[in-house]
Each structure stands twice: as structure tokens, then as C-alpha cells.
Image (cartoon, rainbow, N blue to C red):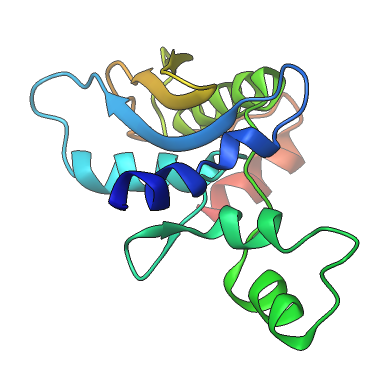
Length: 166
């Protein structure tokens, strides 16, 4: 009976064509030794990802199941609408182009933070039954910090203003 209940919650039976369900994602930070706040950087990078996997209801049932199972034309009762709108979530369909864009955004974010040699790419770990676990591999490199800034100008009047503003 338990096997029948678990088999009925298979959300991939509702997918069409070549769609794949995103079931998880993580950021694998390949940082150099001495990098401060690795956990914080990994968390910030995970918030940049464009695709988010669906959650579970009461840690057991996938939320996309409630959405898909109660999204039929005959499902017009209040309980069906409640399950679809409140508990259910639209399924998170894996998109390679969004994953590539997320990896590029992660590298851009790290460059903005001073990691100018940052590299990022994604890996789609395809499991059984059209499910994908997404892994972002991020190598920030060494961080560059600006020590000092000097402003000069060939125009003496402008140069005097710059020196006063220091």
C-alpha cells in the first residue's frame, strides 16, 4: 500500500515532451585557502540562481504534486482550488539557458566583489525519471582590494580643486 501511495505522488508523469523537474540545487564553492566567510559567499551566490526547486508539504509530499493533480478541468471544488492555490506550487522545470545565465550572474557578482578571476559553470546531474539536481561550480580566485586612489589633472585649476577635495 505504501508503494502505491508513493507511486501516485510521482510528479514527472505530468511533464510533457522533454521537460525535466528541478529537484535540488547547490553551490559548490572552490575557494582558495584563507577566503573569509565562505559560507556567506556560498549563500549569497545561491540567492542569485534564477531557478528554485519546489518545496515539500509537511516534509513529505512535493508541493508541485498538489498543483498538478488538482489542475484538471474537472477540479472546480473548493478543496481542489485550495490545494492548488495554497499548498501547491507550479513545478520548477529545468532550463539550461536559465542555468547558464545564473552561472554568468554569479561570476559577475563575484567580480563586483573584487574577485576578478571568478569563473562559474553549472552541471545538471540527471537522475532517474526526468529529475535534475543542479550544481553550480564557482571558483572565485583571489580577491583584489583598492589600497589608495590618486586624482591628478593637467589643468592646474582643476588639479587644485581635486587636491582640496582630498
